[in-house]
Amino acid sequence: MNISDPTNAVFLKKISERTDLKIDKINGMFKRGDTVFAANKSGWINAFDVSKLNSPSLVGALNVSKKFDLMNPHDIDTFGDYAIIVDPRKFGRFPTGKIAIFRITDESSGQTLSSDNWVLTGEIENKKLVGVNRVQVSGTFAFVACSWNEETVYPKPILGVIDISNPHFPRFITSTPFFDKRGPNGLTIAGKIAFPAGGETVEAIDISNPNQPIKLGSQKLPASNINPGTSRKGDNAHDLVYRDGLLYVSCQSDDSFMILNITDERILDLAAQ
Image (cartoon, rainbow, N blue to C red; front, side, top):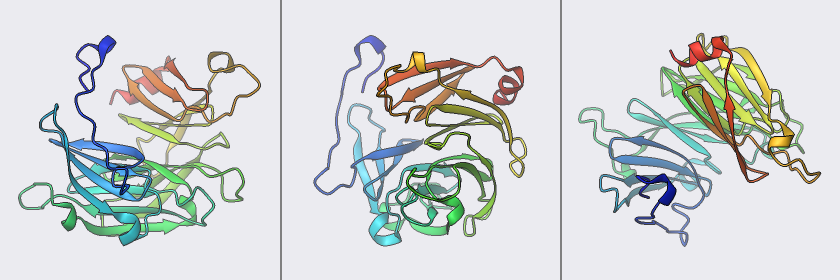
């Protein structure tokens, strides 16, 4: 899509392969060089060549559901030669959540490997990760948002911290609770601050010491600015990005969009680091 004129965005090319689900329901992406990697909830991870912006192409696809028991990958991020994928495993309808790490880059050349050569390097699966659906990497740690279905009886939603310094043996380090029962379905990191979001809540967490995250703030989205009717579904604050003191929040249930202005100097200072 050409967005040089934001008031008149133009589709340049669409890639679609719904017949075999390879690129169906993409829910998370990251870009490295001229390649965009994506995770989709139908059980695949993909690579797209975007070197020619008016003619992107699918250059790799791996069925991680069939080959590695990742039920419905929800997000993906990068560190070094690896990609990390999170699988909520039906958001609490299954007793565990799962994280998998794949080598996607050739160690000597730095070139992206073909999808046939993407190698499962390490994984972690346990009850603490129930509903893990978002991941952001900072340094040698992966921060994960864990949400679960209201019908289940599993632990409360959390922001979890995974030590990935050894990608062969990722380790769950610690977590901090998320104060909204709909749990974090969105996550972004700016500097030394993690912003998880879910339900109708956005939080700010100091991750200067990943072994001991500290909650600095929790903000409920104002009902009057979403959809004040009685039919509100409550699954807003579904994802977000941070830029220059502002949080841009997508409100999924009410089909709306919100911008939050951060005024807390502690949060602004840490986000700028």
